[in-house]
Image (cartoon, rainbow, N blue to C red; front, side):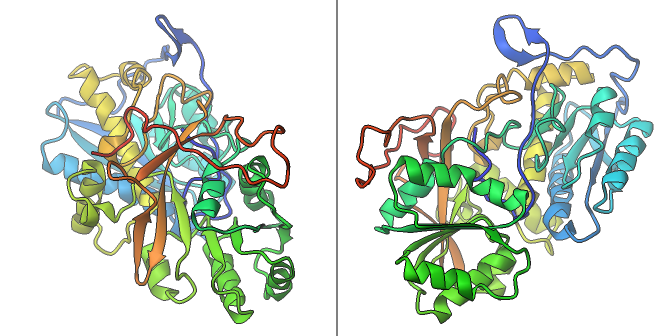
Length: 448
């Protein structure tokens, strides 16, 4: 499980969050069990296929960030069908509805999918998931990128990729760990003056304070689309900052890095929330030199550096190359892939007697789902309502024209942290830097 700030997602300005559960399953106190009372429990299911819909912002100003979610689900189902489907049934991935990056369009998209009597909706990718209540009230299982609110993803039928409940208030010890590992001393945190950006920095600011990292500059008021960041960088220079966390989008991050270089601060360590994307790197190699990312997923590059160690990531890379060769791999596409994989794992568990109720209950019994090594484990017995405070992260850095996993161990690209640890509490003087410690790799965390 994880908090909002540590996810590497291509959306930059869209807030993260997701679910809460309902009725309890005997013997597993946090598992939500669905009981569908209407006649649609087997909608979309035939003897030879299962009809599954998709929806999201396939057009509009955020489409480049969200449309790949549907692509990721599509390539998963293409590969699955090529291998024969599940228990003799193939997946008919249709219809795919575009909400046009519009709240009203999202409601209309959800209504169309319910009217189409799809069995489930897989690959939701939108900043305006206003149609969630339509799908939830119809008992339709939903899988996708949870870039919305806890309320919109609430309930046992709603499955966000990589876990559904996100607590943005928990400290992010990973950022303090990165600062210490890079031998930096004074930090700055910058974000746009909109809640979706500044809110993502909350866990970073709390962690820097918890581990007594001097942070003389916290600027959460950068205008979105600012023409210049010279004034901000001058403040960093005057305060001798050597470590910068940016909660802005890739465009703002690139401008920040270029301005740092222009002011002679090119050696400043930078951690960006947004920009872990091959096309972005290709277009901005100089500005992105040495940049760090914290990834709540297995880095795509492991297929080359550690082949067959993370089979889910290998399968994702192969499918994208085969079925969507013009779409760059991205965390949004991976979210779609993971959504389709979780849905399929539920189908395999229920066998030939496919109903929504049985599918949802099967998934909500999973305790360490990791998409065959593509993500850290998700405990679906609690993932609708809380996080457990343990967080496993892969660190990635730009080396030349490549992203490279760094700071891992011989056994895994992941390091695990306890977000609820009292390390660095009030017992230590404010002037003393408190070392960040890792915890043993958790069961289910991908690795050797």
